[in-house]
Length: 308
Image 1 (spheres, rainbow, N blue to C red):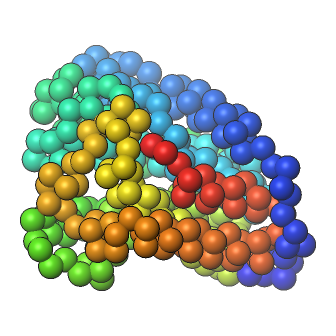
Image 2: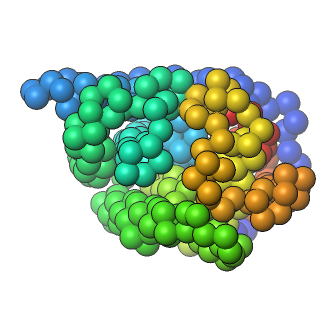
């Protein structure tokens, strides 16, 4: 991490994460609503908005905004990318819920997209959100040098394609029902299926704000650790939480005979591993950025301690 950015490693224990999340969620919700206004044909825009505006933690956009702020940028610089990240994430949820994938009836406490609009429209709604995400970054990002915007677009494409989310999903599908999925394979699935989009959520905000290579690498390592911790906690919650708490069907991994971290390690060791990853992520940020990194440090704790 560049010495010019190193601050005191003391951490502000008075930081109000709830207020921070509430403020950022409200900003993101407003920007998402404004980004997707209904046009003809109405059905596709209704289906896109149905899932895009269905709530959720908005973790990926908030991570993008937080890193942009950390490096000295503004929310206005990063908001189009933040919205694009949520569009891509929403696409992945719509497609993941389809009968050909996880075949789920509920998402975020409401009927999944294909249950409301049909499988055909749901597939097209996901496709439309994915392509619109890149258009939105390219056309709406202002007061940022073109080379930074181009880098973010390239990184988004890599994160969501065969080298990222899609690749992880392919290996995940191929591993269903297999009794001997290795830890290496499980890590591959989740660093790509879940982790790749979280990584670019963190690095994109920093790139837009002009972070140097060292800063981007430190933030990427932070993202990789919280991304894996996020998935471990997801696996734990699939076993321990109710469908009402999750907002989707609980026990789906077990029913589909998917390899999970608890199935390899057990619950206690899985919780321990997630906590160790988060602690390492927090330490690396504190050492590099000090107190200004407190929002990202608090978000790491939020990921490992969440209940849904």
